[in-house]
Image 1 (spheres, helix red, strand yellow):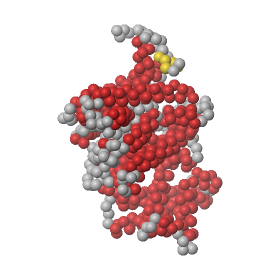
Image 2 (image 1 turned 45 degrees about the horizontal axis):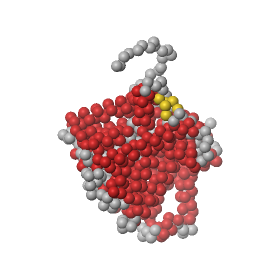
Image 3 (image 1 turned 135 degrees about the vertical axis):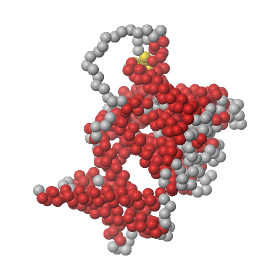
Image 4 (image 1 turned 180 degrees about the vertical axis):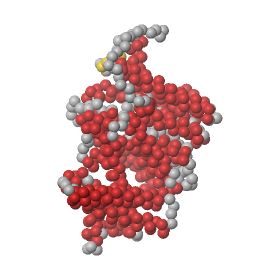
Length: 586
């Protein structure tokens, strides 16, 4: 009994020490890279980082020694074991005057190999901190929290952390960003919108741009999805509680398929972004003299496009001279936007349909929802392209050739449905075009996608529901299937609340901002639809205006119904029905 108490005491003390050490190590990294500090202080921080590695080494040794099942411990701590083994191997090799890190330094032609030790030590600290957070994420999934509230809370935490990171001196060129601008930028990135109060290209340093990129990558996938995938990779499985919670968050009916859906969602995201980045790089690398800069431009825009974020590190967005005439670049961006906006359920259904044997998995969902998503997406793309071409032919596209006009019309039709990139100036467009853009921004992307809006399926369901009412039909039909009445009602309710929220935002902005009503409407629809397009008023908004737009972006990303569900207290349904009575609405 005493031996067990001693063991638990030692493990508890070791855990406390490694948590404190990890926090100190993370603070040391933030101080070094987030602030402009002296060389003497930098050396002190390096000593802290190396001390943390020593504590980590001791902690893993103690845990492994006291583990009752060492095989299971190795299985559930694969990454830690790899890090531990790497450190141990480096120590053993150093006894024989050999160093793997020194060899890497020689290969990279680094003069200061000691600096490489520090970099690896800092990587170990960051990975260790992330691993701890991922395992803590599994504990969060075990809590009895309403899924919509947990989903919203994850976005709020990410936004606040992003705001603090963007306020670090090293994140901006002038080191003086205000909290409201940092908060607005972080909200825009996490909500994959793209509205900016400060120029991403010139105001933020590379460090700040990387932070923004990570924020819209996490925002595109969703923090719970992102962290749970890596926690799944580390632990090897999900419990029933985690599966039930993710079933609500991912909108997957089959709980048994949660692991597959989660893995496909995350892996396909990274794979498509990598392919997109490769194509973008090939299209611009000859025009960008710096190789690392060309790679960063490609990766940044690929992730931004697939996540429908709309952020660009060109001051003129895609109207920049480097890419304005580069059709490979713009079309790649367009197709990444379409893939991200289609939604993972649709991508998964198409993958299953064309590249794998058809099974009963995902069959029900793909049979009607996939068709509805594809038809509505194609219809909106064609409609937007024709409208844009017709009304901007002799306006913003006046100086373009036929192919350029067609390409620009198609691109604007794609991007107005939640992406936020632009190759034409929306401030110069006519009112008919702007009204069409408002409609496309309101509809947005598809369910499970990285965009916003009421969703293509919501619009399609309302259309078929309205047709059935006008034809005095008993039910609404699509693809030889009946659309449930509760789904139709939910679609109309969602649209009603969306219009109400946007209208409230417009009214409040007319009070706080001295701007043209059309510009305010455009900004509000763009924020709620997480589009990111603007007619040039975002940077001139007051503090209250920025907060209103931030709230619209947030509600648009998490969804109006999820936002309302998270506020309202669940009410038990009665076990009885009240009598019906007809009420005239004619």
